[in-house]
Amino acid sequence: MKSYKSKLNSIASLFLKLFLIVCLFQLVSCKKTEPAPNYTNFKITNVKINQVPSFDPNGNDWDFGGYPDIYFNMEDVNNNIYFDGTASTITNVSQFPISWNFVSAYQITNTAVTQYVTVYDNDDITADEQMGYVGFTMNDHKSGYPTSITKSNGSLSVTITGTWY
Ligand SMILES: [Ca+2]
Ligand SMILES: [Ca+2]
Image (cartoon, rainbow, N blue to C red):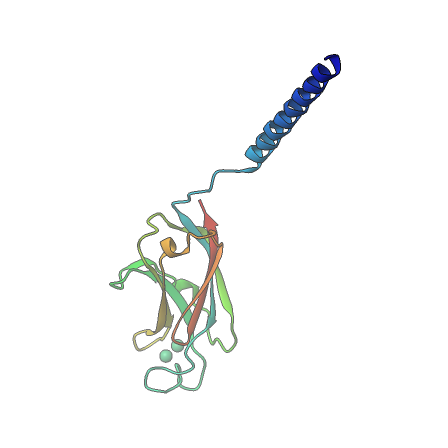
């Protein structure tokens, strides 16, 4: 009878140990699980142009006897200018990539709106020529929150780099 009781005791103690181990495991695994981030804004710190169309829409060089002088604007779908990069033109560009750092990060606080990196050849006498544009809608990039995104439109390829917040 005594040994039967002690057997019962040892089984009970085994269950207690198992229970404690399970509790401990849950506590540890709970600590490891962090809440998924839910960022609502993105700020661009760098814009890189990887490639532009080699020729203008008429099949001619962007500049007669030279290479294009490149800058970009941040624009909305109607060509309204959010950010004007004319003053940061890089002249006579023959090699890519080229890139610019924003002095103060370009903030996107409505991630549903498409922001167009619109690229121009800066010309002196005639109007600047649009070389192309690439649209970025940050809501499309919330999976994994990448800090660097590359997109193309035709022969134009652009990479934006920044921070979610
Ligand atoms: Ca030109
Ligand atoms: Ca030019």
